[in-house]
Length: 108
Image (tube, rainbow, N blue to C red; front, side, top):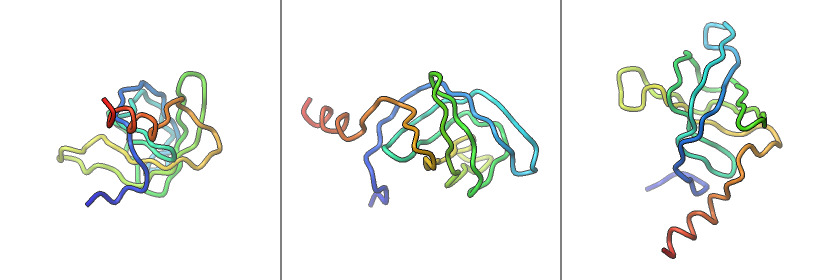
């Protein structure tokens, strides 16, 4: 059973991320969004050592938002380099409505 509270849309969108890593060192890097929902997202290709609870900034097409890290893929697993995020800012970074996308897929 899926525990998600909102529908997700799978995407491949380039972003820039930055913040403090788990060792309290500043980092910045390119990454990409793998999935998005109304309040969260999943990043992939993340090299920084991050931990749940920390907040990072994301820049997408000139828009910036802050996201709390909810989970991190474990090194050596298929989800290594992936990070689950929850939007903690009022900013909506992407112009995609996951509910409308899910409805369109269901119709087509």
